[in-house]
Length: 251
Image 1 (tube, rainbow, N blue to C red):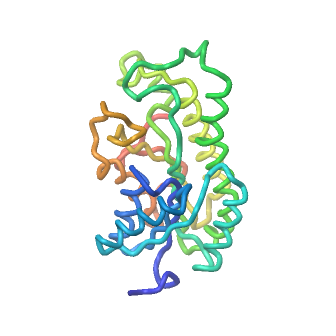
Image 2 (image 1 turned 120 degrees about the horizontal axis):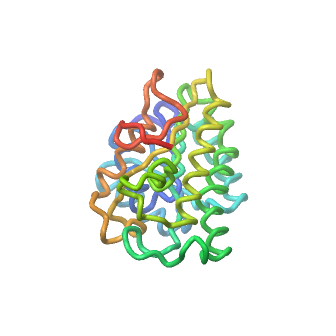
């Protein structure tokens, strides 16, 4: 078995379950060392143990995306472990407005301030803070890759089109947080242009997970494919885009 210094190392926030866990599994199957960020040590250990039972080497760290101290500890971990970070997948997020595809709990005129703030804290401010903390290590990688888990529900173009499949799917806080995350992707890609580090937004699809709910049509294995594709882009791959299974999506 090669050492982590001889192979790519990836960090997946919220990687102990759902799409994040499946992303770790698929990256591990490619020979990349996945490091799972989980809010509890037990959840991280359980996820790592499951991957190791499948023959996939993995590690975990205790990580809350909203905790600046955890961001610093993650930087120290990757600096000591590999002296760099090859892949960052900002996977962790929340949906606080009911079940996707079902009746929404709030109208735009009634969504509580606490729901807006909690959603933006987890889905926008936390990924930005994590990225800023770890970007120095990503810049040290030969081919740094950043994947921001967005959603088609962040597309203003499709939300404004009465013929689009998401026209009636309005969750104000979640949708707006993903629109803002897409904006950050575009701006960071501009900063990184000309470098070997790429950043893109991913729409995983509507996936059968705890967040996706029971109405979702996609399985988790397919839901992780877009993150894996963007995490392993070649040197001539895109940056600053919004993709689902290799196809660009409208902003």
